[in-house]
Length: 142
Image: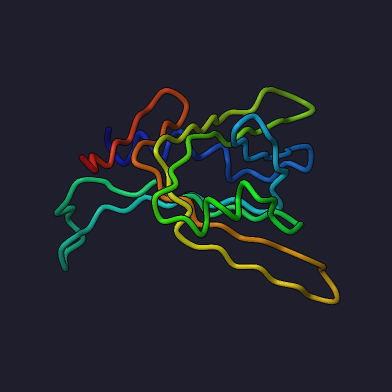
């Protein structure tokens, strides 16, 4: 899959829409996200020419609550892998991006408590495979 295909599929995600709701789904449980980021990388030389295949698909998600035991266990158990999805719901039209991930580790968890914003929990999810709509990026860990 080319980088331009990934970028073109993700472009609709970055258009502001007050009617958009985003959820992380793990084992059938939904967690509403207050923030979502997705990261892909293709290394380049000093001239900017690509020198590697595309890797990544790391997901950074934030919920405005303390995580439940399912997420805590995933974050603190180095062997725990999960598959799930990020679901975009739009009250005015169908969402333009669907994300599914497989064999993912939770490689970082940050919890913040702030007197103004309350509790936030942010997770870095590193999947072996990620689908953006029907486009697969396989990091080929095996």
